[in-house]
Length: 351
Length: 75
Image 1 (cartoon, rainbow over the protein chains, first blue to last red):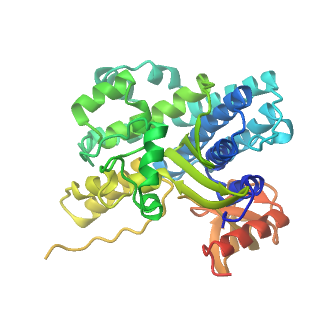
Image 2 (cartoon, chains in turn purple, cyan):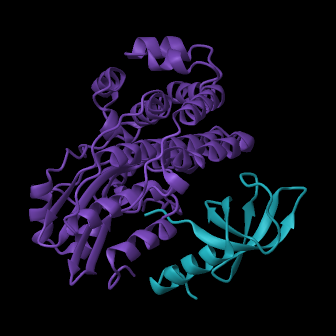
Image 3 (tube, rainbow over the protein chains, first blue to last red):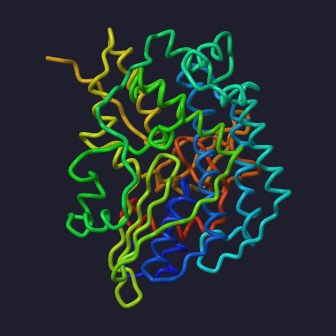
């Protein structure tokens, strides 16, 4: 559907098609188009765009925590909090770019710092109140499991209730797989691999250098002391995944990091990698006579839901006393890996 | 990849904050708990049983045409 379009048309269409992770999709498209056209980088505007990406990650984590986690705990979600969250989130673009146009080549940076700070404070307050019950800063200070257990003791916050359920049911190590986290992909190597791949097959079921990898919030949070310590005990299991998501939702609004947007150009091909809420998002386009003749998107879902990937392996490792228990474990694991994917779970009795 | 489809509201039950919307010709029930000020005839973006936000009709029709062109919807 993007074939035959000019890069400008691509940039107007992508946000309409991919409205959920719209900032990540639009930014990846912009970086890839700019690279293919050999346009110069825009360091200041890109730094603001990176901030919008991180805020989108917070929104995606927070709204799914607020909607899904009560469901996992058999409770009703706080929809008012989700509505308030979405209302705050809709205002960020206009704080950073003229007319809120952040992802077009001639976006004009127009930073309203006081309003931005006020919105960030509002966002942090909402997350602190609804997910951490006022204990956000305490949670961020945790560096090992013993401190985590202390924080969880008698804690009735939504986040704590979910983690406490894992301890209560001894589900801490549930969903282990030996699929590693995707390392940082060197652009030149990625380009070379894609030049030699069946691109359609790669986009459906990507592998890096012949192996499956996961790309999730856990991949991004591995260096955090708490995650490193939990991984030494529970590897990439359910507890570690939920804690990684909580770390992102708690930490990002307090420390937006303005990094440089990077892309790769080679012979009218533009290649871009950005970190979307659920993991690495890759856009690759090839131009011929100023129009797109090939456009590929590799979403994190395709890595994580690969037939031999982290979710498939994790599901195979589940063990429960009965079908209901197994179904519940599978629902929790799918939610922990990627809560955005709609699925139908069918349990097949063993012969 | 996660997609949110535009859908037109065909009926609203204000007591339950639920709406019936038409997504690609199929009627589905969605929650209106996350959006303000919507009425029958409005277009909303729908994902996992929720209307996420209201969008104007031009944008909705343009988006639906793109989904249809991509073979992601029937019409």
